[in-house]
Image: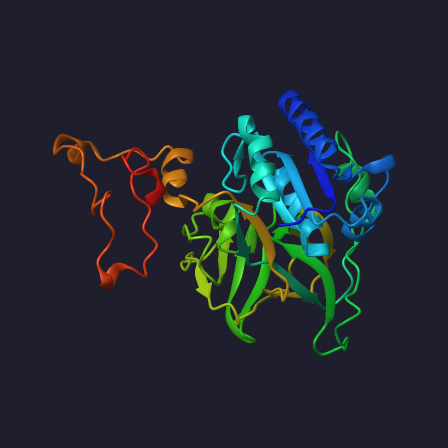
Length: 358
C-alpha cells in the first residue's frame, strides 16, 4: 500500500497528541513521505474540507491524533478526497479511533507494508430546500471560546438542482445529521418522512438521523439502539419527543429520512457531526440519505466492537447472573468452526491461547 503524502490532524489541547505528532513526522522523514499538518482553523479563518486538503497537498492517508472529535474532523477531510483515515486513540470514551498511543510507529509501518484492513463505512449527505447558513449574530455567539464555524456547505456540481427535489449539498456525516430547537422554552415541530411518505409529526428537542457508526454517539444518549458499524441503514431517533411514540426507527440504506420544519414551529438548527452548519425557518426541510461516497478507515485487524462496547460503556453483569458464575466461551477458541459457521464473523476471547484466531 503506497503512501505518497500524509495529512496530520492533531488535537491541540493534549500533550500526548503533540508527542505522537512528532513521532509521525519522524516516521515520514525516515521514509521520504511528505507530511502536512491540517488545521481546520488555519490562519484564523473558515476553510472548507476541499480547501484544507488542497493546502495539505491532497494526502492519500490522513492520521488523526486525539479522540473521536478529532477523528470526525479527519473523516470529513478524507471523505472529500477519498483518502484513507487512521485514528490514534488519545480520547476517553470513543469508538472511532483505532491505534493505541504507544503503537503509532508500528501502525504506520503496517500501512506501508499493506498489513492492514481498510474498512468501508457509510456516510450521510443531504438535500435541502435552501442553502444552509448560520446567521451572523449566532456565529458571533458560537465563536466564544472556540474557533470560527465551518463555512456554509457548497452545492454539489455533479447533481441536478430543482425546486421540487431541493439543493444537493456537499456535506458528509460519519456520525449523524441533527435538527434541533434553538429556544430552550420551545420544542421544534417537525414532520418526519421515510422514503418520501409522512411517518409522523414530532414535537421534540431534536430529531437526528445517524449512521450505524453514529448509533453509539448522540443517538445512543437519546435512547437509540446500538447498531454494529458493519451494518447498513439509517437510524432515526427523536430526542425528548412530546408524544407517546418515542422509539427509534431503522430504515434500509436506500430509504431516505426527510425532516420538514412545520409552519408554527420555531427555527431549527442543523448540525452535521456536531458542527452547526445552518438554521432552518418554518417550511424549510432537509432530506438525509446515504452518500454515494464511503469512508475508508484503516484497521490493524478485526474490530472487537462488542468488547469495546462492554469496556467503554462500563457494562456490568446482573447481580443474580454473577451469583450463577462466569459464563464460559460460547464456542471453541482453539479449533476452527464447522462448515455451517465458517462464513460467520467470530471474535474469540482476547485471552485465548491462539491470538491469531481473533
